[in-house]
Length: 164
Image (cartoon, rainbow, N blue to C red; front, side, top):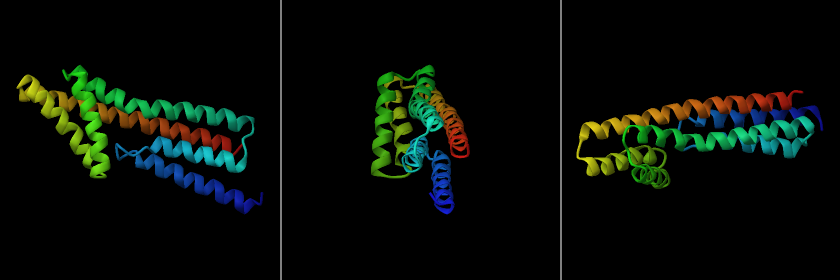
């Protein structure tokens, strides 16, 4: 493969990965999946050598962890502050629906509103309900930090793969 083609592929992959990483700022954007897809396409185009397979396997594992950690941390923090699991699940489903119906902020608005409504209806205590919402938002923040950190590690693994 000519050097200019290889350089173009590496540059394009890097741009897509950085877009995925920066896209993590939007909670519903699957940035870690975008990073993973860029690594997969890079491997398919350039070929998987032994190091490439190992790096891609690690990148895949990190992507799977990153895609589940968001809901786990958000739900766990809301539950630790008193939310019921049914309210958490319905808030997550409402967030997903809101993201599709009113992108890009629909999910960010729908999820806490649904959780607030369900928990206030259940316990009739606004102070407790706000504590639950704060827990959910804190969980979102923790999840962002975890997903962003995992995205950085995924990109670092790709850099080792691409430049070795």
